[in-house]
Length: 160
Image (tube, rainbow, N blue to C red):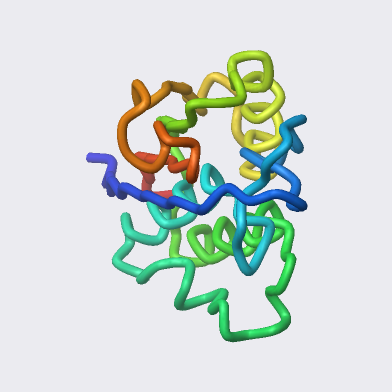
């Protein structure tokens, strides 16, 4: 019988001016970007936390603490590569990912295929193994007031 592990992840970052908006490794044209120690890519961060959580390995703050200057401005796809290697070193592989990005603006639908392709390349997956959905918060909460963007992810790991 194949061994399975499931993890979930969540991340939220504040929207500010003078920062690029990066989601799933893709820079998206917008007048605001996400504030964070790294590139603040909430989608990639949620996926990494889900991967780590599936194996009870903590969260990304444990591996890439915001107090460590080496991670300042880090490309989250580089961090994802490191988490992916850690998962593989533990004897696991990603089966599939499902995720949701919550943002009032900008519209993300035109960028989802590119995000999926970038993440699939980093994780050595087929694009159809990565689900990315985008939704608004119907003007409710910090996402609805355009104060921030959040992402949720669920990852299925298979024993390699």
